[in-house]
Amino acid sequence: MSKQENMEQDQVMEERPAEELPQEEAPAGETSETPETPGPDAGELDALRKALADKEDQYLRLAAEYDNFRKRSQKEKEGIYQGAKSDAVAAFLPVYDNLDRALKQETADEAYKKGVEMTMAGLKDILSKLGVEEIPALGETFDPALHNAVMHVEDESAGENTVVDVFQAGFKLGDKVIRFAMVKVAN
Image (tube, rainbow, N blue to C red; front, side, top):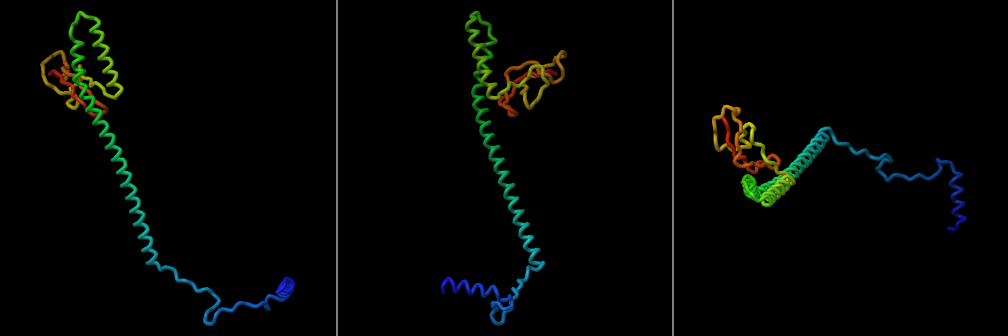
């Protein structure tokens, strides 16, 4: 067909009333209406809702389990680090004790005394930076979670269960006791 014939045919189609236009016919045995697909019945819908709820519950449990695992792993890592840190500090505590004894001894050499004092100050500064604290003991009420009582004395001037002497300083890192304070308790 030529271009002109196509244009003439389009004109003729436009001039015809709508009822004269050819309509596509449905094959025999079928109606022009689309068949309706039956929807799921109430029992099937309830079963699907229950399955969805079960899967959602399973997902939430899995998410909670993962969160607990993540928190537990983080806590274990921190515990391992704190344990290693407290073990390293415990290895240096005999040096602290020796410096403490050296400071309590009388000496005529002021330069020697000054050197020991500076060494002790440096060690205390390092322990402080690591978060290690000395457990307060002298004059405090005896606490078995912090103090190790090695002597008991009857002293009317001291209060009940009061620490009157410290033989060895105690230390803690956070809430963990690295070494208990060795003390003498009154009454």
